[in-house]
Image 1 (spheres, rainbow, N blue to C red):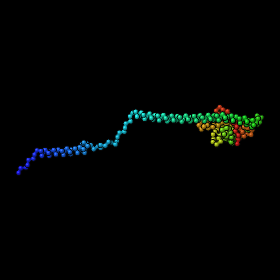
Image 2: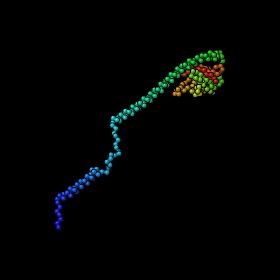
Image 3: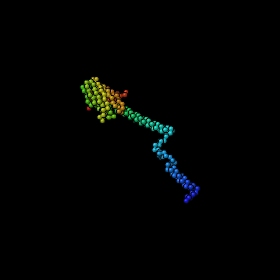
Image 4: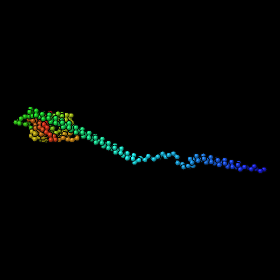
Length: 226
């Protein structure tokens, strides 16, 4: 028995079906592989992104800001130093005014003392055998204590203010009834003031009176033994 003859269209339909299935399969594969991109590298952007590049104008701006900051620091330091200098000048001016007033008061006290205490020229001075001890000196600024230590004709001097602070150190010498002293005082904690004194011992040996010299100025002075 002969097999039935297959038509041309029946065969062509099968071919079209097979081609359609192949196209569908290829389309799915294309979509699944990202357009046939078999590269295993992740499509996500790299985490190691490049830092933004700073332009030359931005760098110049940063440099200008830093220069302005440094200049401000320098200006602040200069202003602070000028304030300190002005304050020191004001303190010096106040001390000069106080010293002028002090000179007037001491001069007046010395004149009164010379009229009442100092013996006349015919009196015989008593030469003190030992001037060691505490001698006080009072002026408008306060009371100062001079501690003298005698070794033969030489003297060693320590000066203290009314609060017990050591403000001066020096030495001296005895020549008959005359006492010569030389000492240094701390001035504003930054400099020292050199002073000299030419004194005479009174007949009782308990007063040293004369003149004190400092920076070209002459001031009357009297020390009383305690």
